[in-house]
Image 1 (cartoon, helix red, strand yellow):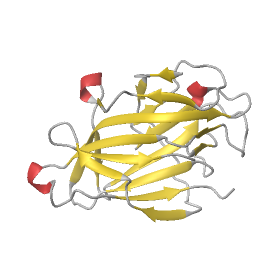
Image 2 (image 1 turned 90 degrees about the horizontal axis):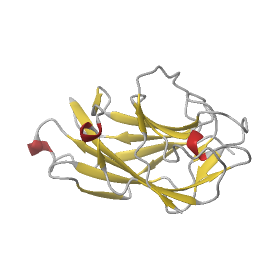
Image 3 (image 1 turned 90 degrees about the vertical axis):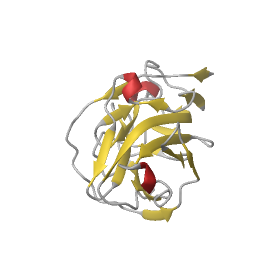
Image 4 (image 1 turned 135 degrees about the vertical axis):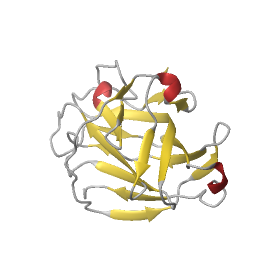
Amino acid sequence: MNKTSVSIIAALCGLAHAEHTNLDQQEPSDIQAGNGFGIVHTIDVSGIWFNDAQGSSLNDRIELLFPASGFIDVIGIGWDVNLTTIGASWASEATIGFEDQLFLAPGAGDDFSLSNTNYSSGGILDLTENGLDDIRISGDLILNIEFFDTFVDNAGSGDAVFEAGSVIYVEHIYPTPGTLALFSFAGLRVSRRSR
């Protein structure tokens, strides 16, 4: 089954910042030029779990680090993921939060359990073309990405997981096009709870 979901829920809300239990340093799996002047990061999310409600220290997180100063704007998001739910959990409950500003549910509308089902955006979706604001990252220049479940069925043991071959795409720009060549690399910090 191949589903394309363009249901992106944009909202602003608070999040209690949890401590990371395990931190790994990695390089992005792929960095490429985006649509015209952006830089696209392809992030492998295979094996990422949706464990608990938003803000829980049990949730998997990714921090995309940008080596620059000032600010950057995330202008596009994409996904090609394979989702499996656990027990009675539904596909529509597995949610990816980007900087607590944009929330993506790849399985939106699928209010049932499933196994290794593909959801794809069909490329990178431009946020402003879809009626959403770009995500402005300033200060520490870290894009925080949290994987959580909107209705917890299996407290403490996980409600869904991304299977092998799952990736998300993040397209961003720097304030001036001349800085693109200088700052074309970003690092990843992955935080997962101990199993």
